[in-house]
Image (tube, rainbow, N blue to C red; front, top):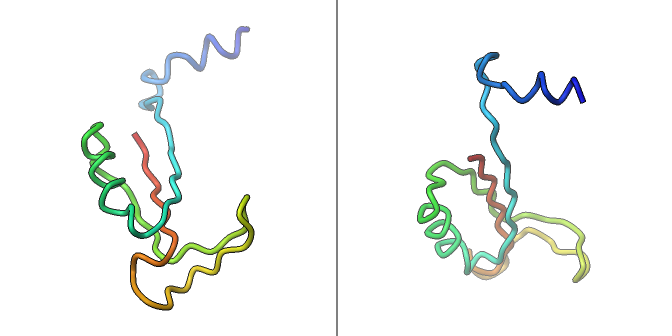
Length: 79
């Protein structure tokens, strides 16, 4: 109620409503995702290469054994 109404006017505090997106793809998709982000107006983002983690397909070690396309890449974008 009242709290939401007060926080709706972020500009009065010098703030803007933004979003954060984290995208994890294979290294071979790195240039495609970069192009898509730029096409939709996201011109600033961070790219983390060789991401490790555990997900629906099991554990993934971030070290690339053969080339830069044989790894996982994480994009962090704010817009």
